[in-house]
Image 1 (cartoon, rainbow, N blue to C red):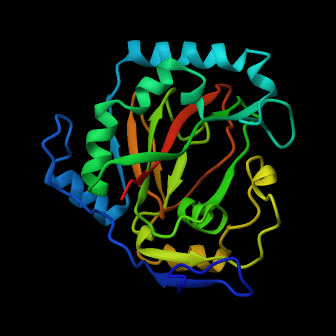
Image 2: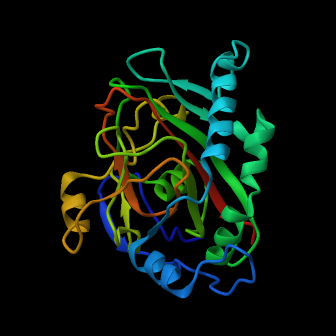
Length: 267
């Protein structure tokens, strides 16, 4: 079977995306996107929806996070990942399996109505996590396409997927926010280098494979500048699985939290 999205080989290559970005478009859901939002998402590869969740809801989710983060039994689980240069917590994977509150959030119609509208079907969670950037020492995530990793390391064949995430704290220009390259989701960067066995054990702390070259980033930015996903806690963001994105170190004195769930079509 032909690999439509080859990567992790001897040479880097940039090819046109084979799959649509928006599969559905019509939705009767209460929280469906309007046509302007759908068009913006299809064109740019991401969409920011301010104040999707109330401050009260965010307070409860943050309290639940603190409960998980300070649980000594949970801390020993493989889903709890620390920073590459310290024992500070960097990521909690599959938080919806450890918390009723986060399990409920994963089924919230404010997320699902829009995701199913974009992907045109029912969906399942491919990955889910809470990303933590501790104040001043929270390290960066290099430029990468999530789909390139899922394709090469998880075997996801086609790019019918997206990430939906909620800001659990305010995201500012100083505390390591998400950066994106608009329109880059229309190109697929096949990265150079062969993936070591069990690469995920290292890449969760520091990603070294599936990272494009400077030349590739320059090519993707010919028609676009870097955009940043900024907003208050409670902001909801959707971004395509293939969009090039990353984030800098947290240079502020405040810890940053955001909650991505990677959703894939069930078809």
